[in-house]
Image (tube, rainbow, N blue to C red; front, side):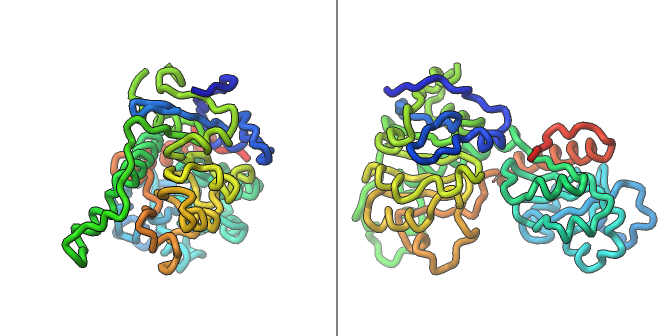
Length: 367
Ligand SMILES: O=CC(=O)O
C-alpha cells in the first residue's frame, strides 16, 4: 500500500477539481489532482407543442437544444420544463430569430449540442442564464458568457452515480471481453469464439483512479463496497502519478477537462503502464493524447482500452481505435439514464428559475 499526505478527498464541486489541479504536469506533483490507488476485494492499490406564435405566451421563454435527435428522448423532459417555461427549440429559433430572440431569457444546453458563441449571445439581449445539462462545462466560454451579464450553471451531484456506473461497466466489460463476446454471438462468421487472448480478473486487481472528486469517490465505493472516506474504500493516495501508472491493473480517468488536464495522459504515461493494464476514460477525450493511446495499444504497451469519451465524438468511421477488438468505444453516454437525465432537467429548471428571479443560481459555475 502506498500513502501520501491526505488530501481533501471529496470535492463538493467537481468543476473545481480542475481549478485545483496542479499546473505543473512535469514531474507530476499531484497536490490537488487526486490520484488514488486501491487494493480491493477487487482490491484497490420547441416550441410549445402546438403554437407557432409567442404572442399569447405568459411563461418566460427559453431556448432549448435537443438531447439526442429532435423529437427523441428529450421529448420526455419537455413537460418538466414547460411547467415553468415556454420552449423555443433551437432549430426553430435559427429559422425565426427575429420572432423569438428578444423574449428568450434562458438557454438550455446539453454538452456541445450548440455553440454558445459571441454571435449567439449578441442575438439574445434578454438572456440571463445558460443552464448546462451535465457537469462538464469545458465547451462553454464562461468569461465570454459572463461578459454579457449571463450566468452559467451545470448539474453536479445528480450525475455522479450514473457516471461512476459507466466507469464500472467499462472496466468489467473490457476485463471480460463482453463486447467481443457479444459481437461474436450476434455477428459471428465462424462457430468458434477466437480465444486468441483471454480476459483478465477484476477481483484482486488494483484500480488507479485519476481524479478523486465526487465521481472518483463513487467509483471507489463501487469497487470496494464499504464505509469512512479513503479508508472505507480501501484507497491509498499515491505519492505520485508515476506510481499509480506503474502499479495499477485498471487506470480510470475521471478528471474534468481544463488547460491543466489537456492531454494529461500521453506517450510518457502509457509507457509507464503495465502491459496487462486496461485504460478507461470517462472524463473527456482531450484529456488523453489519442495518438499516443493508439500507439500504446498497437505496441501492446497496455492490454486494452475502454472509452466513453473520445475526440472527436463520434470518431471518424475509419479511426484506428474502432478496428481494435480490445477497445470499447461508447458514444459519451455516461449520464444517459432516464432517472439521471430527469434529475438533470430538474436542476436545469431550478437554476433557470433562480436566474430569472435574480436569485443565486444553486449550481452557478464561475470563471
Ligand atoms: O459528460 C457528462 C457531464 O459532463 O456530465
